[in-house]
Image (cartoon, rainbow, N blue to C red; front, side, top):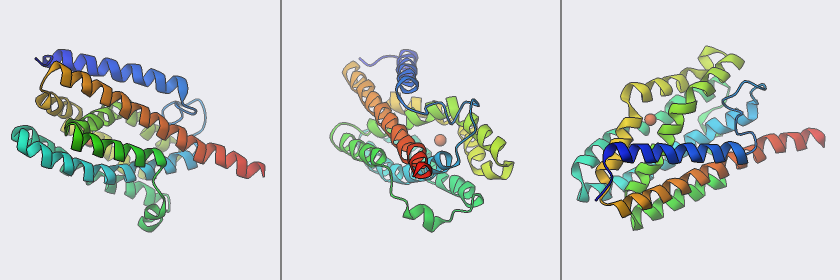
Length: 236
Ligand SMILES: [Fe+2]
């Protein structure tokens, strides 16, 4: 038997909170996007926004893969998932609008190679969707929506303080969209609908941990390729 909805939610949130504590303990610059202790680093911030676009576009393909699997096993969950993923696949435009305000164009963003950690996450999710369950794609969205719910607004505020309101028009619209559409709750619902057993739930928790670990890898890579690299260049 699978856990009831409240227990399921409680355990997922508990895991995400533990994972967040590990993130803050182990990743360099972990608080940079959300805490006001130092000025926002432009390179770090913009590179993160570029990667957000890369991730949204990569995820759109994985979400479609998950949808095709879900349609044959749980049509009602697939219906909700399809609506959600259709909304998500347009969100790259919001972040692209902000980057344009910073003087970057589509070609420049397309020309940036995705981070290694993002590519690895894509491979991991593809394998899990194909060989385990489409729930892997939902786990990813659940993780992203929960963390976004905790921290995205603070990042927008920080960037708005450094730049202007118009520089964060897209990312602010994104935060408001998630709240208005209640994306987090929808993801909890779809994930619970797809769960089949206690064992399946234990596996889901492991998948969530792996996703979280790959996000830590991403933020460490972001730090290395911007802050560390910037210091090295200026020291040279
Ligand atoms: Fe969302």
